[in-house]
Length: 385
Image (cartoon, rainbow, N blue to C red; front, side, top):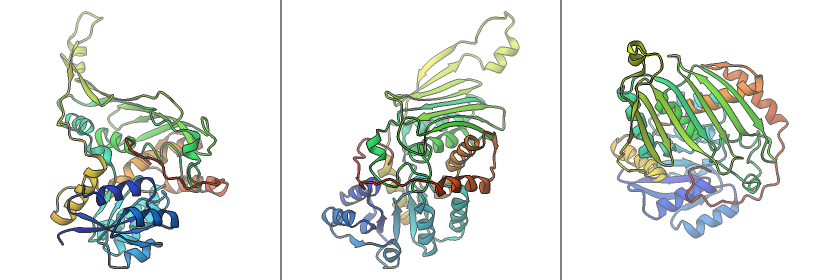
């Protein structure tokens, strides 16, 4: 194989964006061979904008056509594990949009299949390509700043208007989307949080459903976590704040990292806190710090980077940006936050996946679907659907 023939399943917001990149020749080693969508209007769009791509109204039919070596799954969330499963069963490579699914029980089954499949399974965690987050991970993992003591992420610049939620019947419903800000906007942040800082062992969350919008899912969340080493963390997010804030802090023995406004700053203590506390004899005082703007390689290819890595992995065995099996980690945090808020309790990880699904199904049973217009929104300069 010298080029990957890819089929896109779902050409709404993100699927159409991926299609444009591939058609424009931005993804080396990949060609757009087919598109599948249940919406005739979207197939008409594909006919006009994706010359040469064969069109299907059924994803399974596309996968069985022999026309594709790989698929990009860009459908509503509940379909993600279903369609990835169908691809892997056929030894067709699969790149899944975030999240990996709505509930970890289904995603765990996909991961087990992926471990046996000959095909590649990847996930669209495009924020992992961001030079700032890559540098944060590098510094934390180097151990030069000592152990993590506290993590804080205030991520409230996910503002959405009511028209955004009204753009599709599936949006912001338990039966259609499976969640709100945690499951739509924050999978990237939850993935980065655990990718850089590790998974916590306890989660306690508070959330409001439909606080700022006429929706049934959460649009305001505050969560507290505890790590195995005794460190703690706070994660706050909302789609109702404007102007919002995106500030990610990691406090360590040797100082702290602060990521804000696409810049990374290191507050490097002149002496590690444990050593200073042990040796300082004058009561009041602090070790002091040097403020350093951290240089990065400036490389931030985002979605195109993930697509290029996916093709290069299939063709040449090069590393993926994110293996699909890693999608369960951030989803575990999301599920645990929901379950904590629903049951007014602290959730220990690994969590009770059956209990989460039971609670989710209660909400799905009474979910109200909207009369959506199926509008495809402009995703330029945004990192989510």
